[in-house]
Image 1: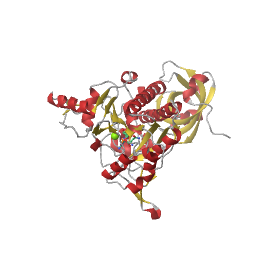
Image 2 (image 1 turned 90 degrees about the horizontal axis):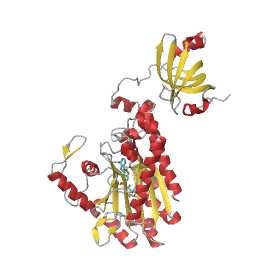
Image 3 (image 1 turned 60 degrees about the vertical axis):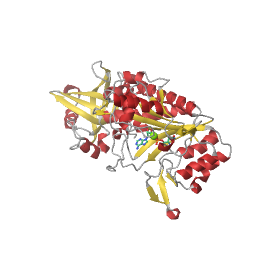
Image 4 (image 1 turned 90 degrees about the vertical axis):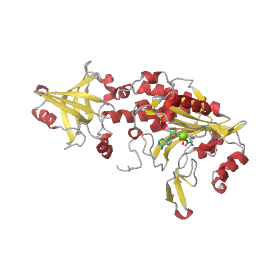
Length: 447
Ligand code: 4AD
Ligand code: MG
């Protein structure tokens, strides 16, 4: 005997008038005399199931009364269209089979503190808002891959255990690797997708990446998922064009496919609807000027209205600077050509201006911060080797990477988008810890 239900709640429109068998968990329950209302969720959606005493046997009515929050069960009944319900459908119950009767579910409809909820993350993910967030996450990932696949990018997976650093040595997680010394958890797949770039022309990797950053901000995780396209015969202008098309596609797909989820999250979608190419672009130099003007005018930065801190040319931006700059625009903002000394070793210097590199960060609107970091890569073997040395890295470890510049080198570019940062922005959630099922943070590894 198979265990599946006869249908999923999301497909209700196709089953009106039919006798159906649903399977799921009790989200909530209310009783009113001869009526029991069960909110049943099956993961695809939630439906109200109406148990009317006179329509069912005494045992079934007793079972309905016995059901508790998060009990698992099958509910049989007739599906009916109902305009008053948020789903548009209700179930008139004829039978109930209890699969597991839950006692004392820890997360009740009352308010709980974040600390408590994080400790119960394995259960918290069942709640409506978390469910909505994680559905949006799944759609962001699906849309990102759809877009790249349709543009001839081939998925090319990069290793997680690596021998070397790619994004600076200060935030590496190390682990012993048999007799071969230390291995490091990948901070990025980029160096490896560069080899795929010369194999397929256009590639991307997608997977978890790790940063042992001791930062406790709402934008940092120690384990996050990144999608990293890399393409041949492409400079930084081509790169920004790809990014704005890519991001716009994802936003429009999420608006299309996650309407209910965005509603549950009370997301103001009007701000997302106008996310279409082109995106504004300002150079790092211009950004510094705008910050200086802002400081002079006494600008403050949301959410706590702290005064904008002064910056000099050559400094990297802090999150408040990014938030301030982004607030001047209503679309994601490219800031390009950063000082060479604040960026990674592999970035191509700007022509005639070696103090800046051909890179850009893409800053989301509404204070969600950097969602993409990308650049044109150095394609000259000698220059790249010099950069590796300047950064105090061992050239012997990077011979394979230098080979990519020795055999059929081409100008190429790429970028990495952090999935959680993108999800937090689209879902409108301030802290990225809710944009992943099990966040890994400085003070959190359980559950
Ligand atoms: O700017 P990052 O460090 O760039 C790279 O790793 C490049 N190798 C990517 C490439 O060119 N292929 O990181 C890229 C993105 C950031 O814009 C951000 O969205 C996300 O990864 N990110 C993080 N997300 C969550 N927690 C962290 N600690 C993150 N660090 C970076
Ligand atoms: Mg970055």
